[in-house]
Image 1: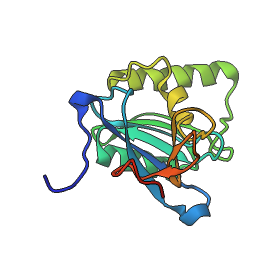
Image 2 (image 1 turned 90 degrees about the horizontal axis):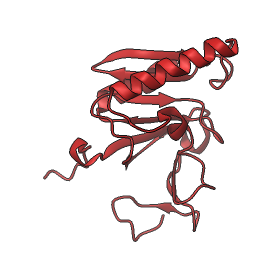
Image 3 (image 1 turned 120 degrees about the vertical axis):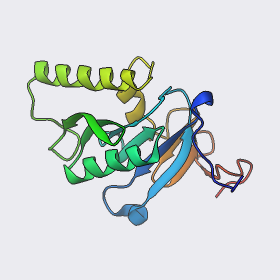
Length: 168
């Protein structure tokens, strides 16, 4: 072992990142691990994440995650599914990265295409993007992933994910 934490698809251990979009808190990206998404490849990302509307991304492949996050940054936000270095689905959200200029029927169809693309990567959640966009909310137990790091709901402390007993 070289000390690097890597995704383990057999154990559904995936990467999760939050990229801060507004220059607050240093404007960086936090990376942690997550399970429950079931991705076998690729990445999904969204800029429509209440409360902060940063870019949240879950993925099995770091290069696909980078492409997903950069694609959203270049297009002012949205929701995207990437696999094998290719954009599989993209929903632009041109109004502050959180709102589309679509009629409800077009929006529903776009969301259905995104969810189908996430399922094609192995996600079996009822709503991959529904789960993704709520990862940052610190008021929902047990942990949240924010631009500050992994936050423990009960204590509101940032958790050192490599040494969980330690708090930052």
